[in-house]
Length: 560
Image 1 (spheres, rainbow, N blue to C red):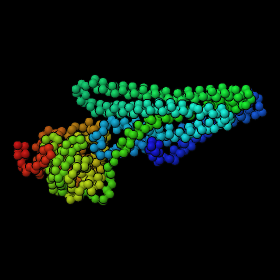
Image 2 (tube, rainbow, N blue to C red):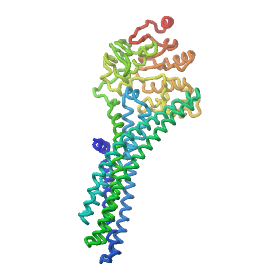
Image 3 (tube, one colour):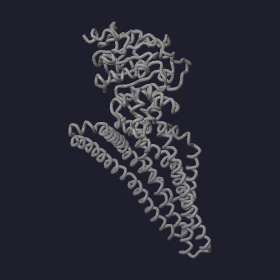
Image 4 (cartoon, rainbow, N blue to C red):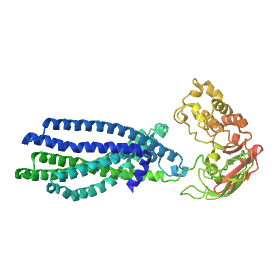
């Protein structure tokens, strides 16, 4: 099963890997000639036979030079193919992770996914290009050495098969332990990555509460666990190859003793003796390497299992609409008897129904946990309802391609997730191929142009991780510009004005009012200036929704 999966990952590179395997096999073939030539040369010197030593020496030097050239080409090709496979494999896993639904990401530690994208993918790429591809060459060298031993002296070579049960027993005992330790180590490494990511996220809070010591203790404890498990795995791995090599060396000594007797009896020439001993010594190299491969296979099995737990998850089909439906411009939004609850939690929405007319602005208010954000998540199809239907202008959004649906909806979230790049990059993030003019227009619509123009580098100002170099209000305007650049018929605001005081919020709403005209808008808010923007207000309580006939003229009734 493991080799079938690995071959599946390797299939796109079969030509490059075949060349790599060919060079590895060529190296083994050339290497197999060296013991025979060396044996003939030394045997001739010792016994004084008629073979020309200069010719044998030239052939031996030529074989060694050829071996060096082949190994150089092999190393170069391995570096190229290894880098290519690793880059593509990382890209493949990254793209798949990006397209997995939010339910997957919310149910999995971010550090676990980061470890898979970095450490474990690199480990698997190395296994594919260095270990697995070199396996046929090692097998070839093993078989070639055994065959040549039998050709020299079949009776002495019978000692070799006696090693097989010992090899199998060692591999079985040590390999079983190695696999369990490798899996535990991978989990510990993922925990370290997760804590490192969390530490960087929590830096402001850590400093505010002076919890640097506690953070250091947690991280060091996780690192120590990686250290302990690495040592355990290293000890087991360190024992495997020497045990195999010891068994092979003992067999080689036995062969040498028996060969010495054959030499004294005249059954074997000195040249045959030296060649036989060299082949017996050469045999220990691939056999020891095969033992190492076995250990790496155990580690690769754990990596594959973790990789399949991600790649085996169905991804969203972004950008593909099999049914050919598109999102109507500023269509009517309707929820009909929608029931929904987050995984592992009770229902948040229980038979909720409402209609939002085209071009209307609706505010959602209510206590935390009542399902306000859930409505936006369902409309964007971040999650699917348990039952009921959501339609836009009569078309069920389940029948609209995700790409078409989401391109028609602009989202301004409470937490402004911004790139660590320029302002231009962040606004352009909202569209596929925005023009400079489109970026400028979006900034003006979001009332962000004035503060951007006042910055020394303007649109090319780097805003830092998550926009840390901007104020909260400036980040919200960038987020609004990012949503507006695709000119969506539907706009969603999820507590988007929470960073403003009431005066700043009122100014923000007034400035943005023109950019929201002729769009269908849903706003999650509890605050008066934003409620004043709404044509109607819906109040959500756990499991139910009530329309409040208020809007701009009835704020006092809403807040009563």
